[in-house]
Image 1 (spheres, rainbow, N blue to C red):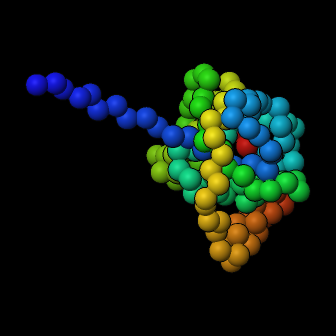
Image 2 (image 1 turned 90 degrees about the vertical axis):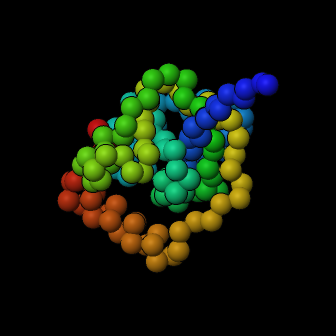
Length: 137
């Protein structure tokens, strides 16, 4: 009788408008989609497709909204901008890293949020910027 080991892998996603291909690295040093602060020293990503969809939908630029399956190349930590500040624990499964993320594949079949949800989120982001509460750690 043979035994089969159950191995579970965690998928991570990054939403953006950047045109990337498998093997490309997403690195620190780019502007946040949510504030006009200096370039970020962290890369943000999530283990839920919904969180990555928000990232793609709110990303600045004129490129097509894209979501990539990514692989961290170094240590990761919970995103403190969401964890315990906006939501107890980390229900959005949002993370950040100072090390690059390697693009594994593009998610090509996903559905964005409704126009009403997207407009509400954009208004919330704009309000945070105006009030100075859209600070990214």
